Image (cartoon, rainbow, N blue to C red; front, side, top):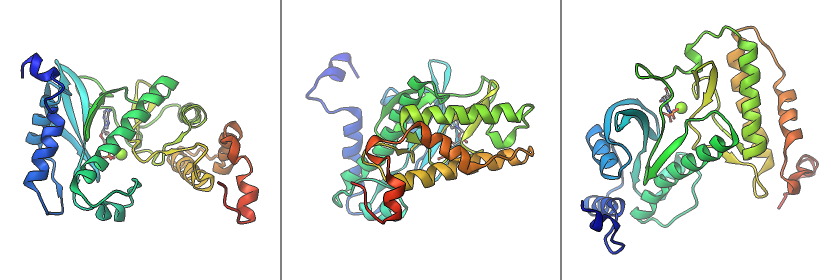
Length: 277
Ligand SMILES: Nc1ncnc2c1ncn2[C@@H]1O[C@H](COP(=O)(O)OP(=O)(O)O)[C@@H](O)[C@H]1O
Ligand SMILES: [Mg+2]
């Protein structure tokens, strides 16, 4: 594509052309568009996210992870699956996305929103000093980020390493999570030995699309439950090193550092069954 064509505002972007093609191809059918290595590579290069895609590292429920290159440097490409169906199917899976009409294009946009959430939160965490892979770019349902690892292999998940100083590592992970909660105002929502990578003597938080924002409009009871679950998951890994801490105490430390000002009395009101607005 020539430069002039690329920057001509009247020309549709590679992404909107792709969406148009998808709509035409699948009109009236409700299905998930399977992610193939070939289609991801073609899209990533066409969208300018990577110069090459090497191989698929992992396939989760909602997204697949690929090792890609940007001019020879390893990066991670995360591809959220496109749901080509009415939004009802996706809601059944427990996705929290604003209700939309049943039109296909809304569902395409909805999967895009997972990539948006992940990209934005990685960026906020990165700026706050939380160890996360630095986000690089996002187009549609794709995002790229720093590859945690070296030229030889990716960083292992916490579950696969044997720590020499587990007590120090636990404190570091809790400190980092406190920064995310207190300064970025987010709960990870799936923090565990699987979503913490071990690299250069510290834990790196990954996989954040289900994170919950703790702000004036949040449900503080839900936030508390999610936070406690994350803390318990992290602590359960460290029990294998015979380290035992009280998750409720850690929860209180977190809450003492930050609660949105209009939610300060959420516990008293919850006892009286009063809904906070
Ligand atoms: N930035 C990254 N650097 C290195 N490895 C990664 C990175 N992001 C993900 N991975 C690897 O891919 C796996 C799956 O990624 P994750 O974001 O947890 O997606 P999901 O659990 O939804 O499949 C991780 O457990 C990790 O091994
Ligand atoms: Mg994961």
